[in-house]
Length: 164
Image (cartoon, rainbow, N blue to C red; front, side):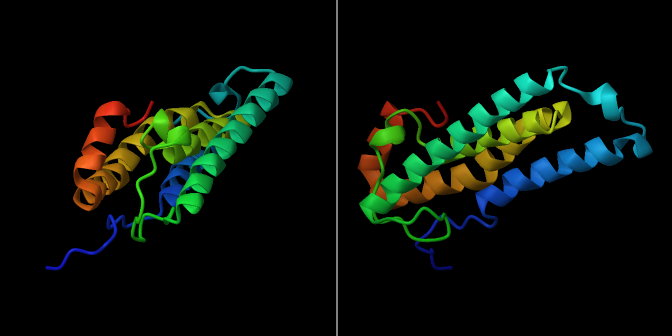
């Protein structure tokens, strides 16, 4: 079986985050029908003003981080999408602090959306979402980058953490 020149990620990562957010919304909305607490019983307990403020800060911050990381990929002339080949190893900008700043940005944005929804369920669902991202996306990307960039990638992994 021939290796493809990409990490072979089956599902676009944003769809994974949105899928978990959608599942949380459904549990919030229809959970009472299967015996789960719903409505006011499932609130974060924040005032509307605080909730909106925190949500906006997180959403904007997550999107800015994603934009910075994706912009670096574009400047390097390599694909952001994990189903396309990587032609350069990003180690500057936000990649100095995390090997996965785009996924960190997605997680921050997700948390902001969960807070905007006033959904403890959505916040809790972020944990299994990140487990799926780690298992189904990041590990495949890391194996691909190790094959593609060899010692340079291994040295980078020793300097920079996977998440934060």
